[in-house]
Length: 117
Image (cartoon, rainbow, N blue to C red; front, side, top):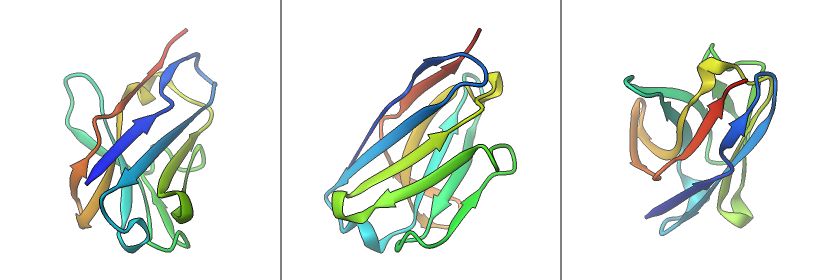
């Protein structure tokens, strides 16, 4: 299994980014996928999840209304569109297979998002 994230960067508060996660080594459309993040000195925080068919999505309260998760099963790719970014969104963002509720493994190496003025 391999998960490779990209799309992170430095952005000002209120800005936007689109993260991507290319998956390989498993059948992408058969598992629940999630985005999780980890800020410096803090624990892993779940951000969003999507059902295997892409029809259902869930969000943490902290990002609801600002972030959108989506997937393209034909491309084995997971996305996270992040709008109206806040300083508190600064973290390393990882895509993960959510093998059971709240258990995120394996995870990718992550892509860094830094929100700063």
